[in-house]
Amino acid sequence: MSETDNIPQSDCAPGAIHPVASQDYFGHSDNIAALEKSLGSGRFHHGWIFAGPYGVGKATLAYHLARVLLDGHVSDQSTEIDLLESSAKIRTEKTGRLISQFAHPDMRVMRRSFDTKTKKFFRFIRIDEMRLLKEMMHTTPSMGAHRVALIDRADDMNEASSNALLKVLEEPPKHTTFILITNSPGQVPVTIRSRCRMLKFNGLELDDFKSAIEQQFQCQGQSIKEDTNWQDLLHLSGGSVRKGFELITGDGLKFYAALYKILDRLPDLDQRNIDMFVDGILKDKSGQDYQAGVQLLSDLLYRLLRGRVEGFSLSASEKELSAKLVKAHTLERWLSLWDTLAERSLDVNELNLDKKTYMLQSFFAMRDLARGAF
Image (cartoon, rainbow, N blue to C red; front, side):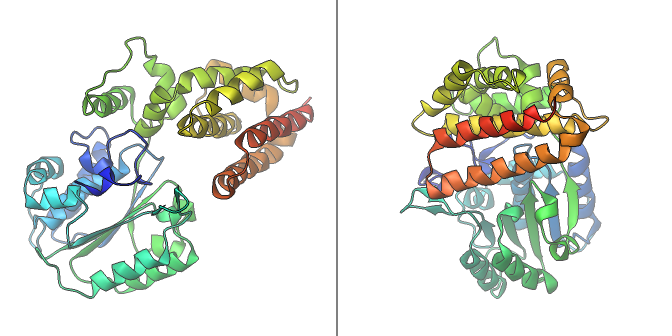
């Protein structure tokens, strides 16, 4: 039984297959080529940052890379390596099985832990995790010549854990690779970024996006509704497989339509639409629909704000809504509100505050700000 069967994992969407279990890989051919070139050069860099939106395949590619590194495919001699083909072969061997079970002695995965007492994830990667990493760095690899440290996500580190990682990176042990996954590279200290190579990941294109989501459902013996609007799903998710999966399983498309109606009426508020949206996302006792609703609101506001930036793509209806609400003289105030709502959302989860009150206050705050745009 793997670790993912026992407790929730912060690096996996509820109901989805974990990145370590994803078999086929879609998109990001340039990043794969960059890794293969470095792997085959005989001078593979010790630190990598995989940066980009969450749910686009960063962690999945990191596990493909880890298999190849830990199975001894990398040497000091130049050689050609097919990263995905090699990973597929290793997956069924001892190295691959141990990685899938989070039991490989030469690999450490650091992520936010689940607190079994509060039934919530810790807000940050704790310093204890970094201490265990430092202990591993002082030992000899058990199964081969290489070690891997995977941090998912680097922007979940606090100051203490960041400083602990920096000390290791300043004098990296030989034959050790650090892979840092981040959705917000700007939140990773520059002292850490400067010691790593960065690969930037973007949202997937339609065909890869669709194939990756279909893989999620096929692995669980499920199917996707034939009337799924893939173009809308791609737009709302930004090409993120995780977001797309959450939108499908959490009725996200329906919630988006209701949410858009609310914002489209601003600076007026239709209480009936608000009640339908808020009550709808709170019906699900697991909290998945609520989280999807909060994320939809945050993402929609983000797109409306980015819509004021030339070259940022919006749907026709969102473009009209952005022009209506976000005036030049209110742009900074909208940005501040977007940031404030994100912080309050974290407080709701951490302090177990009333979710309905948070949602209602969010709409009231948008109403008050929208009044200043007219």
